[in-house]
Length: 306
Image 1 (cartoon, helix red, strand yellow):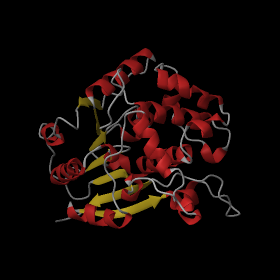
Image 2: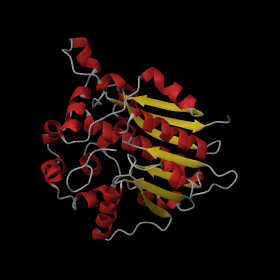
Image 3: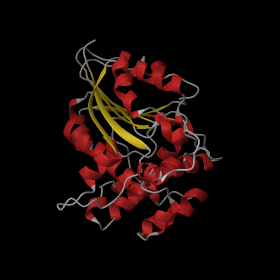
Image 4: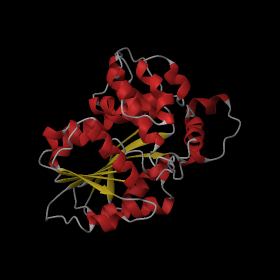
């Protein structure tokens, strides 16, 4: 998990909340998402880092100066991508686990669709307590089917938590790992996927994002062609490092299927920057309306019979 500021709260979690809030109010329809909870929570973020970023909410072009190239479109696309999956599928799962939840609001926003599911938000104790306090400050009552479970991924095991949440025969789970894997060591990622696989029944699903391994290599002098495929990626690595939240895990694009198969998951969908641009930021004439940061890709997979 990310190293944190003195407050113990992740700066990248705050930034994601602010960007979602900006997206909610964005007058450009292709940038608009519906995370109204992020708008409310963003007003309570008063850390030095957050106050420096608040100009995002004014809707001006300072956003492009303050964040790595393509990060705002990526956060918007990632939010829309996961929201779409939640709307279509999440209600079929008896248990939903949101790992490294940060200021995630899907348990609140999709309550009607998820009211028959049990939702568990699992995050660093300090980050989670901050979120609980912010929700209280905003008079937002968490839904009754939501349980907060504190876990320091660097010090504790997810398996220990899941051992206290038994599955009934035939119960299917959904695991969401949004903005998490890149902050773990390689052995932690494998242990996490192994735990999820061992716990899950067939038909359970996982949604996650990965940073590409080559993004984490030392920056070099790029040719013109390389600049086209490195849209904001190296800048992103340097930016998260500068705020003390260094990326430590990356995977080759060709290795994603293998990783999933190793733990009994079959890939249902994979969307990197270009694919996300086509889905969310391309108009009817085929024009790309926003370029997406190329550091990451989104993955959607299902647990199959072993």
